[in-house]
Amino acid sequence: DVTTRDELAKLAMAFAKLQARDDKLFGVIADSFLRRTSPPFTQGPLPTIVNVSHAFTKVHVLHPQLFVAIAGALLDRFGELSLVEVVKYLHGIAKVEYLPPPALQEQLLRILESDRL
Image 1 (cartoon, rainbow, N blue to C red):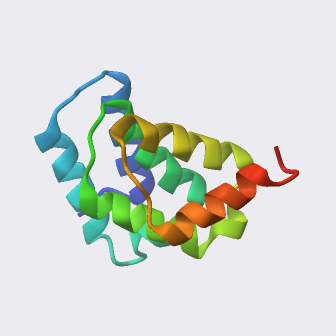
Image 2 (cartoon, rainbow, N blue to C red; image 1 turned 180 degrees about the vertical axis):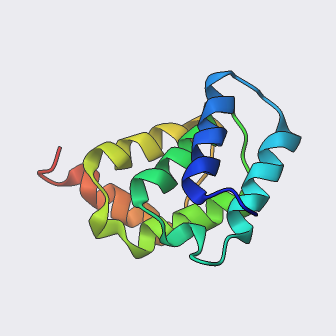
């Protein structure tokens, strides 16, 4: 994989903006994200990780392994998330009816109940 994480994220969003609802195409993109090990995709900037989930949900594509990895990254680094990123993530996962892990659900609920709104 010679494409950088950021280039791949931009590519995913470009196809999403074109409304390219192609499960196979987005499956290849998801697998490419998941193959990244140096550094792992999930250690990238949180805005990029949220934008990747947004790209997939924009075309209503749910890649289970990718969404589990994204949820794990968001949970591990929840304190770094901005409110805008939380809202973008929630809006996207609602489109594909993805239910994040219970621990992430609790964190999301706490932030929605806090003074940050």
